[in-house]
Image (cartoon, rainbow, N blue to C red):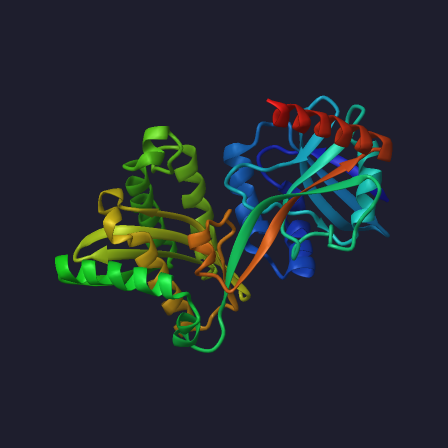
Length: 344
């Protein structure tokens, strides 16, 4: 009974079923927390130092999370850049205080990064002496209710005006615009490859951060998208001007939400705003399909992106300290650093 830590070797291993059981029980099988998402992340981006933290009570596993050492005395949730929110599969955050004492080496603090307030044991009422909350990003949601025309009628005049302008420009210079959607494992694989080729031709390709068919990101997304597609939980939406693909969005879903994982567009055609034209088409399609209750963006939203949303919320970083004195020391040091920056 209590916590134990288990070294991971690129997968959840024998704990996969428990992982998905807890995700289903606590978070209605949130796609970002699904083993089909987590295991490709471990396979392609883990360092080998990750530990699965397992909490058991009365002979049953009731808590799971993955930590990795960040530096001496500090552990952090396993958080590759591809994970916009990170799971703590645990009902009661109070149990995390005892976790600090069983981690290898003397631990000062644990960083629980990218916590969605709707999907975390650290709810807004938790204000323990040893905890610090810091805002990390503003994410947005489009709730799927009624009809698309009702949703669109409530958008700002500026958003509707810009969309109409881009739509007219496309109509003037191309014969057609169509939406493609790929959802079978075979078609998903090819669609992810097309996505990667397009993204590699843009600024992310020049920076070396793009997804492409020949790198780890491309292999990771192809694998996880195919696994989700096997149960009809993946979609790749593509926008075409005539026969030219101009934008693509990779999505995973459950019965509650569709999550837009990644978006790319033909940067030579930026004047047409193909990414926004695709977003309009995707939302219109999802309102028509009524298969989810919301579209989640999980991004650090710009003002332009916020104008598309029906709801917004802050994603938070939460730090748990071994003792309240360590928390106060951290806050004092941070205050000195901020004052020094202001004086400069």
